[in-house]
Length: 116
Image: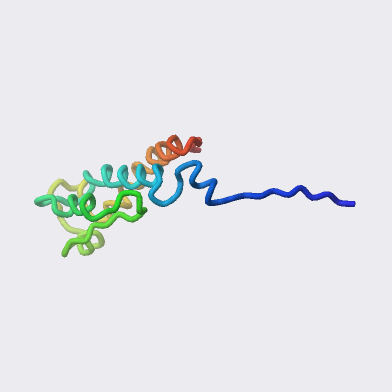
């Protein structure tokens, strides 16, 4: 005779316990930290593009929005930016390659976990 142990897992409860749900502390940390760390990488003339990340993003949503008339163009097309080479196109990807480990460690700490 084979005995099976029953294991119940409530995913919603587990996510809430560690504040991993949308709008939770962890997602708010990740969103705000990404916006903060993107600033030095984002092209800047008068700061509209940088300000758009803060004003148009709902912190905790998991989506960073920078909707300006030229955001898409500057994100994908190389150009000579003031403050280059730090400020330039694909600023989110470049920020992520430099800071993803520290953002992950911070998120893990808030969730009560350890980052590898």
